[in-house]
Length: 411
Ligand code: GLU
Image 1: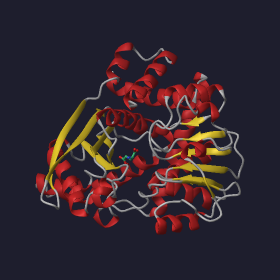
Image 2: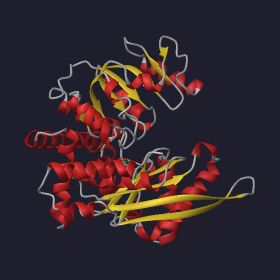
Image 3: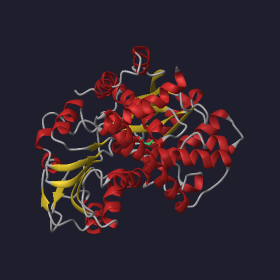
Image 4: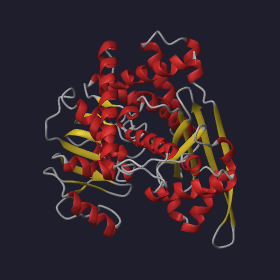
């Protein structure tokens, strides 16, 4: 079983080796979350039986602002994954330059096996166990894998009921990624994918990529689906996509609208007319300009990194590349735009949502996208400068940038 936290700490050790200005004390401190909490959530199921789910919240670091990060519902979710994701959130917010710290939550569950009522009970149960530590200035959760705006609305409602806080701006600002009519921000849905596109756009020339790229997208959830659409709308060609059950490829480009409709109808991409069925492993090794892992951790490992034929990688998943694979890609001269920069668009718009809630404002989609683009461009440029100055990989450049900002506040 892989341990994402071990990988995260290997990245931290590497940055400590490269950048001697981080003291041993600082690195020691960054190796531990401020707290990790495990909870049990008992749920009366529809058939009358009782099930007890295991849930988590890790508050990693709040040097730059309230703990911030999503809640993941997945069968593979466990404490080491949540710790790693919380650590990456702290760095992500720091790279983006937003006043937020890092946290993450989760529940070990396959939400597709629950009825809507059971899902609501589970979500409210998570808040009941953790309401003491949450709050707009303390810890602000958001969606992640398998959690939706509707789930955020149930959670915000539960939080309001428990705390009896009459200040609606504050109870709303305790969760981001809410539906628009419940205080959500315009543009939060596609924000991660769009932010990834803005980062790519800012770095494209530096990555030596053509104006029209052949793009491969792994994963078709909120992030993968949106990023495939956004790249297509911007004249790039998406030549392969995958979900948890299937993968398809057409070297001349896929008709993305057709692909989306086909998946809606049949539940997967399998046998989509005009494309070839391939395996997920084959998809990652296709020759292309840009490979976008947009699903889970540990998909590019020492086993397949040597076979990757993409000219560059844009990490929209969290932790898709292991430290060993990173070394191989670096030697092969395949640049990797790291997760903590590439997928920060989601949390950036979450920060906008929090800010709008507290000020009781609602910005237009145009304004949200403009502000997001500005942040992604600025952060990409700063990461690049750090990378060049320290003659290292983009990931190490982003890590140094983030850790310097955190260090300044805690030591
Ligand atoms: N779950 C997203 C992430 O991994 C967004 C977190 C947030 O909006 O707070 O970055």
